[in-house]
Amino acid sequence: MAEPVITKASLPYKLFSSGKVRDTFEYEDKLLMVSTDRLSAFDVIFPQGIPYKGIVLNELSLFWFDFLKGITKNHIAGKLPPSLPRDYRRRSMLVKRAKPVKLECVVRGYLVGSGWKEYQKSQSICGIHLPSGLKLASKLPETLFTPSTKGEIGEHDINLDKPSAIRVVGKEVYDEVREKATLIYEAAADYAETKGIILADTKFEFGECDGEIILIDEVLTPDSSRFWPADQYEEGTSPPSFDKQFVRDYVEKLGWGKKPPAPLLPPEVINGTVEKYIEAYEKLTGKKFVR
Image (cartoon, rainbow, N blue to C red):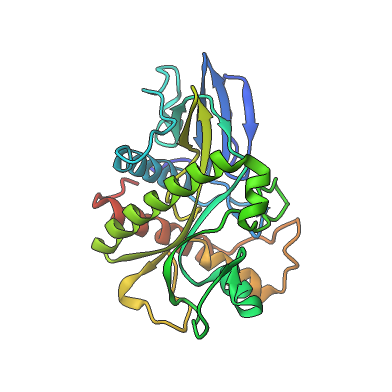
């Protein structure tokens, strides 16, 4: 039996927050984080859900939290509540309450996206000077930590140079999240390479809990990362991605102004997105995704 498409979580717990994709509820002294099937692109939430998307995001995050536990602690807080309905169990995680660090911790190994646009203008990213002659999708000389502001729904994140980021969170927190984010990225990129996938860039979120900085939210999913098939990578071109590229390509052709309301998506775009998310899950985890 197919899982239902859930674009808004409806549970008998007090709602704590609702983001672009996740609905979070209070449960005893912890939080219950539910990954819905909502789709957000260009910082706009689309009216249709993507089947299985929330399950892929949740189960892939759980895989990575376990994989990375030797590098950093995370917010996972134990087993799901027995009262949680079946339809929500594969898309939910029980987590510790943490005070979010006010930075999107973006880490880059390749020159693409907003980093490529900035490099073309200034030969730098977030104030970090780079060699001349780099191309679209070039592998960077070293892993770059390029944080940004945390935009709310409908707001765009703004890249920050090191002094600006330190002004937001302080030098001690900045140094710690930079070190953790870089170590996590490099460990994950090395692992993904063994699965035939290039981890081009990603973003992490950290929070303060019991006097420590821990990894929170989601981690290394197609929503937060740019995954490329290694066998299709070619410097100077933008490789196909295991993510929302089907959606981005479709709406770019429509001439949509990237402001609400988002256009309706045809079945082939929705189905293509589903397949890319599931393919990423299966390649990275080595497990068959159960539909």
